Amino acid sequence: MKTINRRLASPWRRSIAAVLAGALPVLAFPEPSWWWFAYVALVPWMALLRSAPTGRRALYDGWWGGFGFMLAMHHWLLPNLHVFTFVIAALLGALWAPWGWLVRRFLAAGPSPGRVTAALLVLPSGWLMIELVRSWQGLGGPWGVLGSSQWEVEPALRLASVGGVWLISFLVVAVNVAVAVLVAVRRCRVAAVAGLVAVAVAASAAWVWSPRPDVADRVRIAVVQPGVMQGVGGADRRFDREERLTRELAGQGADLIVWGESSVGYDLDDRPDFARRLAALSRETGANILVNVDARRSDKPGIYKSSILVGPDGPTGARYDKMRLVPFGEYIPARSLLGWATSVGKAASEDRRRGTEQVVMNAGHGLRIGPMVCFESAFSDMSRNLADDGAQVLIAQSATSTFQQSWAPEQHASLAALRAAETGRPMVHATLTGVSAVYGPSGQRIGSWLGTDASTSAVYEVPLADGVTPYVRFGEWPVYAALLIMAAWCATEGVRAKRPRLRRRPGPEPREQPARTAHESPARPGH
Image (cartoon, rainbow, N blue to C red; front, top):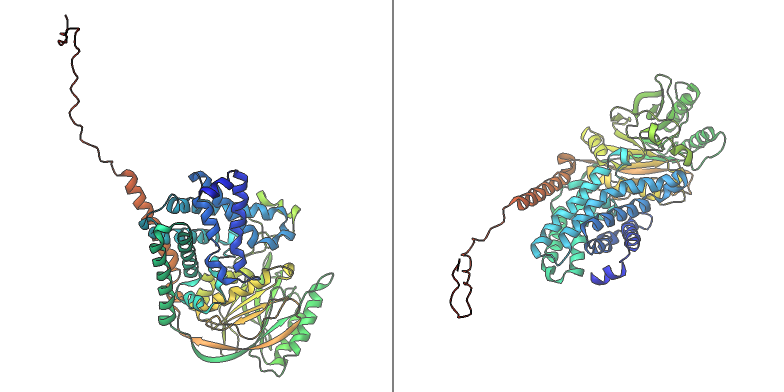
């Protein structure tokens, strides 16, 4: 630790090191998808935090590290939001400042085994509090939750069915804490090893005792991905392309056909010709079609993004209006203060309107579906609510055409695996321009991804499952447990601060020796 402090004596060097260390966990997410790296990615950051010379410096290192993480996770926003991307990263990065202080509080200056044991609970709980706060859609939503990096790891998906992505995040951070102690604090290695064993036991218990989804039936669901359509008349050309791709599905036995987000650029009441064309496609293919209309409505003011089910006779009346909008992309928070974002990037010039409730639709053939739009698939509570309301298949309609040459399409597609595993319900992630993907009720991939270079349609054999996962039954219990852990720690610290120090009983004062005269006799006062 002395070596780290010596090399990073300059505050600016420490800040740069914190930014780089905070950005490292992003490598565990798609597109690199080094999922194994998530279990050690926080170690360099924690080593820097525990070496902070003061608690105040640890706060700064936590903030700078959070800035690095947020900037790296959302780097693909730079072409659209420009300098505002840095502003958002700085604001959200501040959430990690208290966590930086906590790391130093527990791991600095040769911690005792007891303090390390407490750190294995408190530090992951503190991380979960950060993920909980930033999961509010007004702050950008739960994009880049650490547990989401494990979307293709079967044991982790089993954990998701028990406690959602929250449980995975908690255990991943706990492993990082244990590894950091193993590397830097030799005297506490027994406690660190015990922490690793506890995580292994928890994962094994979930593997053995968590219920598996029981496959009850199968349905054939088709995804239509038209590809990038830019320039004048893009909405009409996109519809024409989707129509041709859908017509190719005739005779393939599809039970449902799904188009991506903003696949229809006109309100169907204003354009009955589009509604007639969709109804004809439904009759020709023998399946209802779930489209997504991004347009100004004729029956109420404002622009909505709406999932609409169309059958052989036209729109069936089943409609879901998107509830959680993308900050700056679909609305500007506090537009009176932040409206200037439109002058520095491609922020929304007009706020879209929100829906008021989630909807489970009867898609025909006895199939009940739960639609979500765009980054709503990042919110585990939304998919949980749909499963609890009886949805057999979860569907996310998305469009990532703006971010084609980045990691965003792969990151977005991976989220559906977590939502499927959490709920025990298959999930279809259908996009305009890729990546489109389908996952089974355990989060396993079904078929091949439709990449960003594909303009095609594909039919997937999707298994339906019965039963209720512990996560759907009990909800975000890892978050509540983390809140209790943090509350217990705060209460303990408060008691310690107020506990009176034991005072030593004052002993008899030393007897003062009388002064002596030149004749070695005690001097007598007054003489």
